[in-house]
Image 1 (tube, rainbow, N blue to C red):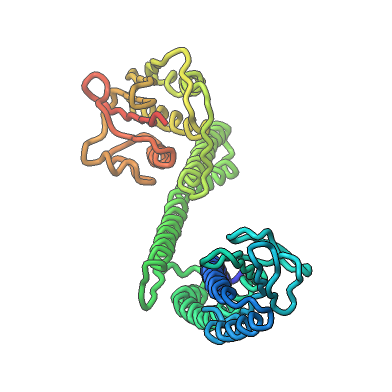
Image 2: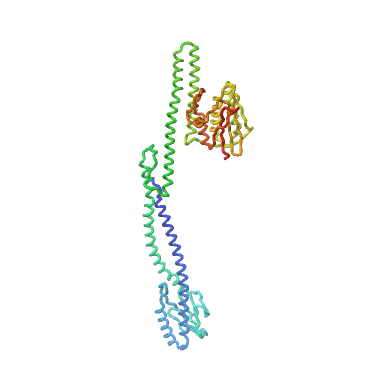
Length: 457
């Protein structure tokens, strides 16, 4: 698959910048040259006209006047026949008496006045060509000279200079293009080296990428790539430990289920078979619960775990879950109470919030002795939404409180059946949703409590 070239893109932008700069320079020089050319040409017209007007005075015999004017014209052209820009300049002119009588005209000039006989500059045309014309009076005012030059001479006078500039700039442009091409290729060499190092890695290799030298442009790429590899290594290690722990935890209940099934098949007495069937049912329920917890934990820990907050009634959802969990507290005469407003809307992930409620309340009921109390509190505060679950059981020692969030960890001395995954699930979901989880005091000066705080946003 062909991809756009970054080198060609950089060179193209540099070339475009050079072309724009050259066009701006050429336009500026053209404008300045035209201004300079116009002033120089006007000054020459003024000089020619003044000299010819003074030369026309005195002897007015046509033949003598013509010879004198031709000699002066030749001298003027030899002295300044080319302007400062190198363009050939041979003006056309007429010499008039003040009373309107034509005294002399240069070759190619009509006998009619080129413009009204008034001193000053005008633009006129004859023979289909535009001209710049100057009318100059002699010092005595008896003679008038009309001298003209074609307007195209003003633009053509600029072209030689522009051609010189173009030639010099073309060489600079080619040299600059070569420098850009070499420097861009050498400057992007570290990226090619980085791509080569990555392509040489084997599948599943999560060691940090090493390069010979870091640059300001490549350092962020290498750092982010190594951070991603470190995260992936941590995820793979977590998955391996998770699978190992899950296999270990499933081994015992599955062995028990197998033993009870074998007993059920081999036992002939009805009471013994009924007892084996009950034990088998309990074992299957325990395995099913453990598998459900493992799947919930896997979803909570997965990097692609969905988190879709929606505006929902947190108080109503909490009451629904408490009503279902009350069936666990009733057989043991545990008082399960709820304090919550009638309606409390909040942006929450429904499945995650339900998992938190189920695991916190289930844990509290499971580790509270018969006749105890479990209290659930939901409230909105200035800092966010708070959910608290407290009980008056035997509590958790401070030294054990951080470890209870580890997978499959159970407080030493616990006789209650459990998977050791409930609080681990709550912790992972809270981290995923940006909520803070911390211990609080239990009820009646004993027990333990957990408070989950969702931020306002």
